[in-house]
Length: 325
Ligand SMILES: Nc1ncnc2c1ncn2[C@@H]1O[C@H](COP(=O)(O)OP(=O)(O)OP(=O)(O)O)[C@@H](O)[C@H]1O
Ligand SMILES: N[C@@H](CCO)C(=O)O
Image (cartoon, rainbow, N blue to C red; front, side, top):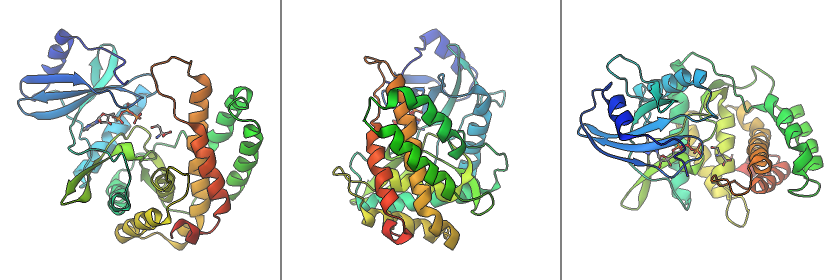
């Protein structure tokens, strides 16, 4: 369920009057996604997505996100492009929420990940990192290493009920990750997506071969270690339903990434700890949501323990080779 804010016909028509995107032909809520309210919009000029930003997005950060998306598209990445109104502004207000219209991307995200998806994903991620190079404004990662201990503290009281021994295991894992985390300046930094899960990558199939048609959902994007984005993808794309790590998928991501943007020796050496960091990041945000989402809420909670298994795997796989590098 991801239409939290309803938009009346009159409010929508008044809103669209600010744009030069033709006459409204169709308008419907998009059920997917959990953060914001999204609507598909068809006009005589084309297809668009209207997003109303809900509580978890800080309105002050929206100009950065929209500016990054505009920059990435201008530098060759296929991503939603914010559409400016006649006044030149892409960000305005609708139904009491900050709102923006972006171009609609064709394609679908893969429900079942095949190794053939992984090469195109790796190349697209490196393309994002390349395209982001000239975007100079910095947005620190609000869910980076400095946020993990406070997040764990906020789960301390209720987390134990999710699994006995969980908090002690996370305390130990986090201490190890933070002690081994690359020091500032050790690895290349740039604009990263930071949440490039399969549901944020659209593909089109041509003769059975998937190609990436675009990347979406830049609302966790930030300025951080480029290789951390690779670690997020190894977490999100390379585990099978039986929890095993598929090294073929990892190798495909890493090879295709490196063909566009070579990874340095230091980045490869740091990959295991970056993977552990990415695992604990998603574990902690899921755990926080798990213990703070009332049963019966309309939002589907994501399983934190899926990431406990990934964290344990990366805890044992300490060499870059074990991760397909
Ligand atoms: N530019 C776009 N083109 C086509 N479809 C889009 C576009 N943007 C969003 N969508 C559709 O809306 C859905 C939700 O988008 P998105 O992932 O950005 O939402 P969200 O609420 O921020 O969710 P979450 O952070 O949980 O992934 C996508 O799965 C996709 O179906
Ligand atoms: N990708 C995140 C959700 C936030 O976008 C997760 O699976 O936990």
